[in-house]
Structures are given as C-alpha cells and as structure tokens.
View 1: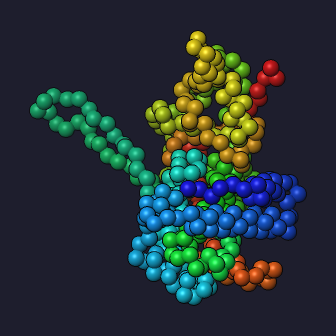
View 2: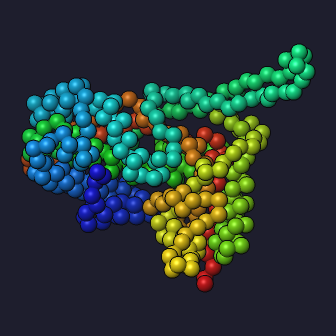
View 3: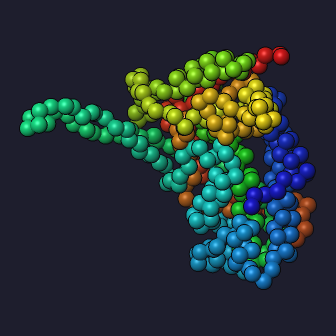
Length: 386
C-alpha cells in the first residue's frame, strides 16, 4: 500500500515542485521547500503506520502481507532489532541492500514511469553491457560451404554515480512498534522522497551532477556539463481523427530507427527496430486529458470509448514534471538507471525544534541516462482552440 496523500503533504509537494521549476530558484528557497516536503512525508508516513499498527488483528501474517508489509529476512530483522536497541540509526548506518531493492520494487509498482525504465543495482562505477544481433543467415546448396555467420555485437554505457539525499524523522514511539513496522515506515518515507526526485531527473535532468533526462540531448551541451534540450521532432495537434492517424503514424515511423551508440559515442549509423507495443507517450496530467478527450466518442450503445491508433490508452504516462506544451515519445526499456549498494543513513546535525524524535539524512547513490539519443523523441503540442 503506497503512502496516502494528505492535504498537508500534497501542499508541500506542490510547493516543492513549484520551487524547483522557478527561474528565480535560490539555494535558500530550495532548501526550505525541500525541508517542508520531507517533513510532511515523515509526518504522513508516521500517522499512516501508527493507524495500521493499531488496526492489526490476531491473524498477523495475513494482515501484514495485505497491507504491503515486507516479510523480513534474518539480516533485515537483525538490522531493525539493532536500531531499536540503539534507540535509532547510528551515524554511517548502511541499510541492507534487500531493503533498498524493495523500496525500488515498490516504486515501480506505484509509479507508471518507473515501470518502463531499466532499473537495476550496480557498483560504485558501472559499465553496463548491452548486445544487439549482427549478421544474417544466407541461402546455399545443401552440401555447400557455410555461407553466413551469426554474431552478436556488444556495446557499453559507463556510469559514474551521483548522490541523492532525503530526510526523514523517526519518533521514539515508532521504535517501539517492532522491526516490521519500522521497515514499513522507512520504506514509505524513502519511497515517496526518492520517487519524486528520481522521476524529475528521468524527465528533465540536465546531466550536471544529476542524471540525463528524456528531454535532454545526450551529446549537445548548453553550458558547462549541462545537456541542452532536445530539438522537437515535430508538432502534434490531435485536431481530428484523420490528423491523429497521420501524426501518430509519423511519430511511430520516426521511432523505428535509431542511431547506433558504442562506448558512449554516436556512430552515426541508423538501425531499424520493431517497436509495436513498446511505445509510450509521456505527458503532463493536464495534457493527458487534452489528448484523451480528442480520442473519445460515444458509441451506438451510449458507452464512451477512448481509442487512439497505434498506441493503447494505458501507454500514455503522466508526470507532474512534464511541461504542458511538450510530449515525449519513448521506447520501453531504453532508459537505464540504477542504485549502488546499500543506502547510508546519518543523523541530521542541525538543531531543530523537535521533541522525542530524531531527524536522519538518507544518502542514495544512483544515476541514469538514455541508452541512445533516439530512445526518446520530443514533440511540441498545439491543440486547436475548438
């Protein structure tokens, strides 16, 4: 069960997103918005976990499983028991890797965008190896020489790792609930904080001490090490049925070829691929309804039916970090992201007006980028006035 969105948490989240999107963003403004957001996450998670704890019944295992509780491994149980004995997390505590993996599994279940990327665990500096078929079979006489050779071509992407920091608050009362409930609380807090930051980076990260997002060009630098925005492949209007068929047909056709990439360099060679059932459109929540209303009609039985050519409605993914005037066409699995090892937790050193609670900083090591520059195409949107 994901973290339930309270009014206070939603307001803090909206303020955080607004702050990060502002052209007048200052470190002080960002720090204040980030602090308010993370504290709202902790408060909402604490209230939810305490309510679930109070509602438990005698059939404990079934109740825990139904509520999304993790069945702890021996290592995890020992880890949380030590947290309880120590009255909190010690500085430099490393979460077991299985806990971090479970956080990401939860995220992929709840966040549609994170379901369609390749998300894996990796080391401190990683080379990810990919393969593509090379060669072809040739016809010849039954007893003739072997005419063809099938081979596989390998290429790599090299990633350095970056730090993603989140805060969460643990009250002393929470430590008395037991290992399963501490785990539930930690996963709720980390999941909500990490998901939003990770999703934002996957969409619009500029590559400057953050991942390279789907809106960015892998090879074009705007300033320093920041990647420039991708040039638009074209404009989409969704004006009427005939126009939708033409626009989406051209969009799909453009994605059937990609430029080969080897050792982080663009080889300039185009390769054809099959994309049926693999294409997703990523848009803002507002844009989603602007699109589906133009593809919805009432049939003879009075039922409303939404139908787009070439792309299923469930393949339209929404993200709060997408601009309303842009659309990303993306091929499933062509963005690679990962997390390195366990997650380090330190106590927050600053003095805060909190009683009977401790603030912790969780530092996650992760990174991500497109497998090649044609993994995503960006389009501008211009819907007709009527």
